[in-house]
Image 1 (cartoon, rainbow, N blue to C red):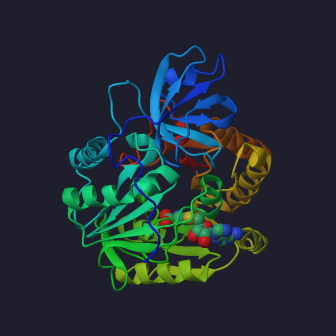
Image 2: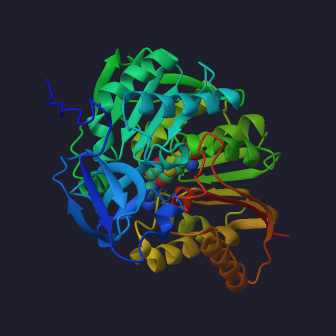
Image 3: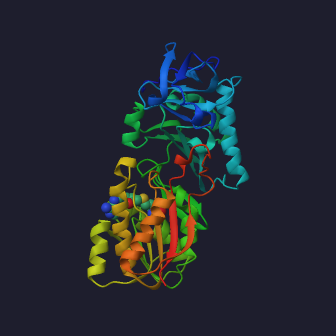
Length: 410
Ligand code: SAH
């Protein structure tokens, strides 16, 4: 049995220590921003255990908020409640999970045959917790130490709310886990694991999701509605789906959108195998799948004088932090520039960025630069983000990471 850390607030959910802020550092937290960085902390009164409940106070002793302590992370305290009467006990976590699942039900996104994000971290006031539903299974991703201490009660609540066949724990990105001092290998938390891919419906299409080994929690749920939006522009076009992963855009454009043909490219052979399987599952014979590096493939297509009526660019996160922003913007510029050259007149570019540190304005400015350099105008038709099962807290706009711009070259 893997070691399970003790659940530090199994009792009352009341603070065991007070974290005092440096003078003039309280403002974001009165504005309900949930991340208290180590650099804002003046001192800690008490000796809180990892993941324990603590109060946050101004330097002159005024209560600000209640949260959970992590001595390892740069995010020293994650805040969950902003009034001193709220206990962070089992009922509290249950209430937050019920609210999150309730929202998906209200949105009509809690369908047992489909996939949806049930809990979106800060967007659901549950900083550090992600829960995705794939049919009868749940995939849980924990990005905060304090949430890992509460996994048992989180699973109890999820079982009672949605009765899944199994709950799987999927590790967070390696870098993130290290920052939080988290060591959580993938494992089955409850019930049974699926024997093979889990099949889910998305806007009338079917996709197999590899819950055990797939990227993220198995699938790019955040692009669900953008795949459908892209498909609306695909009719009769020759389409290139660059960074295709399991083929979501390709299948939507080929089947729903009636593209003339689709070339789907990803550098991961596992990804292209999934894309092939999903194309076959939906009878999308017009999809050709190729394993190749996107930068090389784009250059090769340009050198060969190929032309497309539609190109989707959905690269992985190029910027890990603000520090790598310039490099990331250069990489976005490069692929978009080549893609623009590959588009025939009237062609459609669906271009995405999932780097949180690249803002919407940065991304649009990059596109303006590409258009200027290429001496080709770009008409922006749609500026999109993740679907409504990925809510973003207005107090934590860092959660608004996905940009998906649909543009046309006249
Ligand atoms: N569009 C996909 C999600 C793409 S995620 C969907 O809708 O599901 C980004 C993908 O880029 C990953 O599958 C990853 O394997 C791939 N990738 C990363 N670096 C790459 C590179 N240099 N060339 C091609 N593909 C790359």
